[in-house]
Image 1 (cartoon, rainbow, N blue to C red):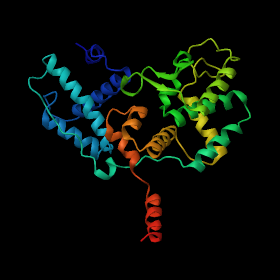
Image 2: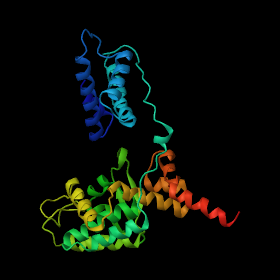
Image 3: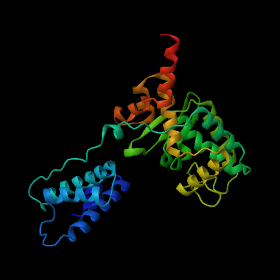
Image 4: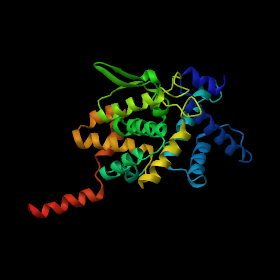
Length: 293
């Protein structure tokens, strides 16, 4: 049986399959460069490959661990088809506590205000309405870039009492429904839908269309960020918009479980990084103690 077929039978996502196959090919290319090596894979070889990723490839520990996850799945396949006779194990690369708890960069109120102002300065009506809607989905609902560009028109539910955004295949392939409660986001969606109705791709299923194609893809998002950066003077990424949403949820509610639900994190540990305060915030708190002690 082919490894890719094995993965598809387990309903592994295409993107993950591609990543796993790339890692296996990287391993095989590395192994074939080792003279007098008859075994396909052994624990010693796997440890040496891990060292190769770290010292030669200079891969980040998180990248190494993602690749090891692909190798483990391949080992599972090899064992199932009888290519190896026993389990082979290798530990993940250790991630320092400092790296594990590193706080994501988020935008402050002034930066958000400048980004919003920059969007409104866009002279092209189509781009302005589309940029606003894309940015607000990340900023006010915490959507990931890929989730935004894959939204379908039918994923936006605006019926009375049931206003929501459907994420049919988020990170990890998870389905979710998010409440569409933000007034700003609703207005942005309404403005975009009106603009979109005049597009030659108005009948297409994707929510975000391009002026030239039926779907606005990653390139369109890259150009959008470049436009807004240039006008606003704020250096930001799409993921920082999502980080800003997560930080605000924590700041406003203090409820990690609620933030975890809205951010759609599988593990609470992924959400806890939003509870870490920036150094300047801590300094400000310490300074205020002078007034009360």
